[in-house]
Amino acid sequence: MPNLGESVEYSEDGKVATYTLRTDVTWNDGTPFTSKDVAYTNGFVYGDPGTEEDEDGNMPWLAKEIETPDDHTVVVTYNQPQFTQDLPLSLYYPIYPEHIYKDKDRTNYQDKEPVDTGPGIVKSFAGQLIVVELRDDYWGELPEGITEVHFVPSGTAGNIESQITQGKVDWAEGGAQGAPFRRLHGDRGAGRRHRVHRPFGDRTGHCDLRDDAEG
Image (cartoon, rainbow, N blue to C red; front, side):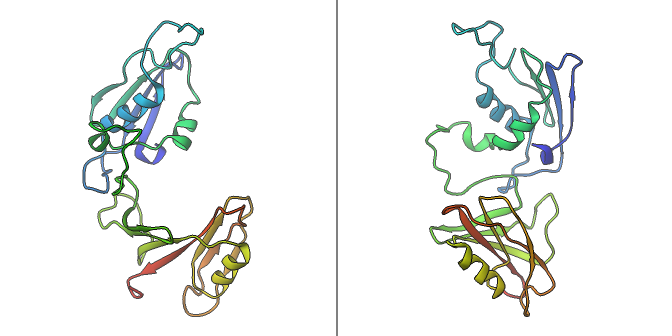
């Protein structure tokens, strides 16, 4: 949630975290992002609140229900100090749109038109090509001239490097560490920097960035 919030303040004992959210964020369906979304998400992440240990001696994460005093303030009260809890929350638990999921079975619902706060909207989805169209109303910064991003599975490292050096793709990523920068030659993408990760197993892919001129 770092990009969605302006600040977080902890009580001296580390048991109460108060988040102040940005006021300009919207979901990609135009709905404002509010404290209800954060409370909904963190509520199912942490589970039911309580102040007594269970039969295994475990204390619930939350001492009481998450509070939302207004649309841009979230107050989380823990049973134990949690000064470092923001990092795992940010890494592993994206915020869910409460207005989409509140009346659905979250574990079984198949979201065919994903709603999120990011810069794109899924235009089409297929096994060999995912097309994401960048939002005109995005609340953050967008790269100049880019209107679409195409995600394509690429296979082997040699195949990826070949497509990059030929100027067919702009950026590739794999599962292993190592990210050398390469420059492309030729008209398309010339003078721009591209990041190449070495692949790990079958976890490889590349991005093709489309601008207005290319359509």
